[in-house]
Amino acid sequence: MRNRVLAALAVAIVSLGLLAPAGPVAASTGGTPDGETHPNVAMIAFYDATGRFRCSATLVSPTVLLTAAHCTSGTLGKTLVTFDSVIAEAPPSPLPVAGDVTAGYTAAELAAAGYRSGTAYTHPQYSDFTDLRNWNDVGVIVLDAPVVGIAPAPLSTVGAVDAVKQPRKALFTAVGYGTEVRKPDAGPQKPTPMSYPLIRRYVTMPGQKITPQIIQTNGNEKDPFGTGGTCFGDSGGSLWLDGVVVGVTSYGYTENCRYLDGYQRVDIPVVRSWLANFGL
Image (cartoon, rainbow, N blue to C red; front, side):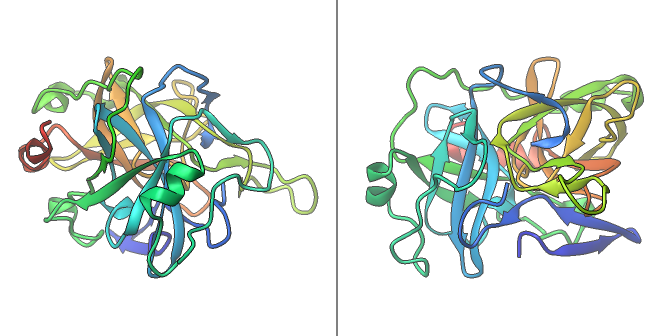
């Protein structure tokens, strides 16, 4: 479901969530360990009918996390939330397994394991990767208790990205807990998405194209103006421009997380009018 390969415009588009039946399979292609640079970016984990997944999300009010619709659609039970910048340097995963995987997490079992919990909501006009003109790949997690001590990330004003007339001259920053792409320790030395470490990272990327719904960036770590791109598990993580959040990570164009990355704009009316229902 969340790691299916989809075709659009004759190019493979890969949603950047990742299936993890027994633990989160481990953020980015290139990039820099985040530490506490973006303390308001969280990792989330959740179940749906096909297994357990993880994504990234961003605190935008004391009780609301912004993420991607494909990180909320079909969620069973509660969503696990953690703001720890380092989840695991190596296996095994520290994340709990739901007592009943067919029902998902409960708030009580997440609290007992030391994690926050929340309820997932999906934009009602999410097109499930079928319509680039009406993408709407945005969702929220409403927390069961407010976050104290972490400042929410600021959202851009409506239409802010429209002021970017030359995307290739704009530098965007993406933050998330996605897969590291590197050469394996043994075997064929082709850069490959790896499971661990599972940590928060950020990357900078020049823009490539902006549409009424989507921001595309050049996620190649060899780009002279960028440091990398997003990969599996970065889904729902925030895209920043000039200190404010302008998008959430939505898709990549290759299964090895190379080249172009796509982000759902959150500065457009169809998104902001829905987010207003959550006090944003």
